[in-house]
Amino acid sequence: MLYAHKQVVQQLDVRIEQGVFFLTQISSLQRQNTCDVAEYSVRYTNFFNKAWLILNDMILGWAAGSFLAENSEWMSEVTNRFIQSILFQFPREVLYWLDSWPAGLKLNAELSRFYVNTLVGLIDTWESILPLFPPSLFRTLGLVSSIGGLTLLLALFSDTLSFLLTLHLHISYLVTRALFSVFSLRFPTSLLLGVFRGKRFNPLRDWRTDTWEWDMDQLLFGTVLFMLMAFASPTLGVYYCFFAGVRVLGVLSVKAAAEVGVVFLRSFPLFEIMLRAKDAKRLPGGVYFQLSDGYLSLEQSQPIPFSAIFHQYNELRTRLGRHYHPLRLLYRVFKGEHLGSIPMVEMRYEGLSSNANDVRQFKVDS
Image (cartoon, rainbow, N blue to C red; front, side, top):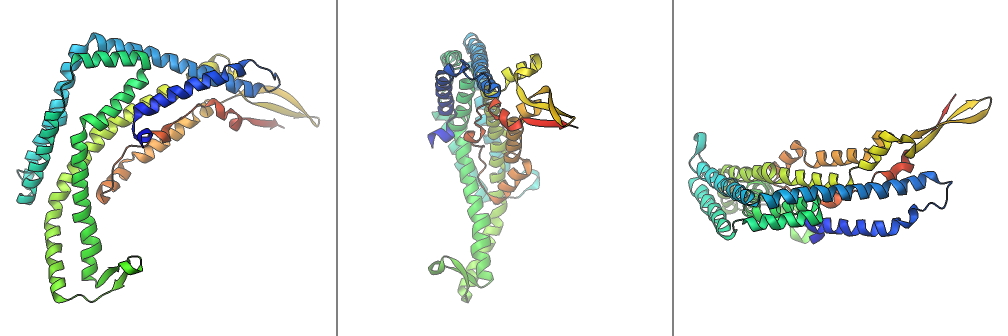
């Protein structure tokens, strides 16, 4: 559970895996079987690609750490001002604006006032609990970035945004989603409509729907409840849509950008691209044969194409596009389903060179 949701824990796990990889693979670079050039090329490319990525990560982390340490006063002032204005003042002003019947939108006054008092109280409580970020914190983050690299800094930013800075927004989203899902979707559609259709759930038969004759008092009570839910649904939906929009545009989008940055810093095929541009023969992907007089003659070696090098990134782009597709998110909003970020475990990626054997082709020219 902790591993699936904490980016810092996953980043530390990746660093441990990389250390084990170097300890186990450095001896295999001493080529013993000169005939299996492709297998040796895979080990060689994977090893140095990871080494390059770690060095680049440390260099970028040192640069970011130096910037944070040298500009800690300015970063503290800007960050605290941003947190106060965007994460606290903005949602508070929008809640008061929604309670004042904006653009002639007449919400349920009592329910809207209850929402505003509860959610504004939650925002004020978390604002009083959350301390200001002092300059010493950014100097500490600069030290962490210099030691752990830029990926660790991005992982810290992602976890801080999700579990600390926006905790009040997350709780507000969960509360409004639960109320909207229960009183605007599930309760009216499953229970009350079943009363009007003469149906009920039978708990003794695995909650199947059976025919049932309801009394007049029960039908009248169901009608009153249905009218209450119908008049309360617009108010429930407005506040739920606001916090759902804040979660998608303000939290998930920033968190997804940080996670994609971590993935690219971990596994971008920098060394492979350099080899492909400088000496393509060092990335063998197959050979050409020519058929002449009934014999096959070797023509030339075929390097791995760029499409194969970026094959996993195409899959990653497809996975991200499918998870964060606007229509999918909009559908989940209307269904009252939880809007979560893509699990970082699904974005783990260990290297493109290991797929070299899968893209090897032997072509025969007649």
